[in-house]
Image (tube, rainbow, N blue to C red):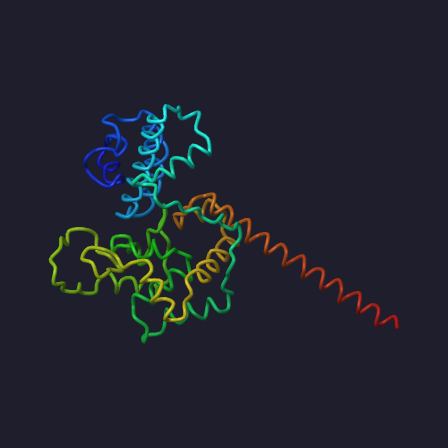
Length: 305
């Protein structure tokens, strides 16, 4: 297994799909396509455009162990994978394996944003982030990245100094496949984060890795996502509405392919945002035309009287 795949799987001991089943001493052949063509394929795609956090590797291993546990249970029940039905899944869950004690059914995500920050308020908050010296530098930088580019907190907290590059007197941020040109004020904030002295910690750690722009309390680890969100909220920046407002504004001006490349999002997500933004704009134009038609008819009626 190549080194990149080993790292994505969360260790250097070989692919998780090659691990023995929790109940059997051999590998289940059906687990290999699931590992290589679904889990690792998605992991590689994400790692190509952004940092692969340790939590993602843990989740990868957990999903593989669950799949192996299910396959082992099917062997015990003498059932083929193609014969699996919903009542079999229910019986497996009731058996309460170590990986299946908690079942979370996620809510179907909305196709449209439920909460959107208006442009006027978003620009006011962005101006505050760029100019207010009373705010902490990391809050200003994270807030500006959220309000301007709609980057999620998970992506922001994992940013490193080597993702900020200076070229031809311009500063770029590598957030997706192609670098983003940064406004001078935002570039200055990120440069301050990249060059500020590191805090001395009681616990020694390896400093040879990439320098984090938003370090956390744990040596060598970024700030927790919920901690970053809480800090932004304390300074009046509600992350979800701010991010939705930024993405809607960008989607109204950029094609889906460019939006996906710049921000490192899946192209299907970019297509949904572009569809939403342009339909919303079309609805606005239609409503505006209807209002103008109504006003014109009222004016003609008043002159006729």
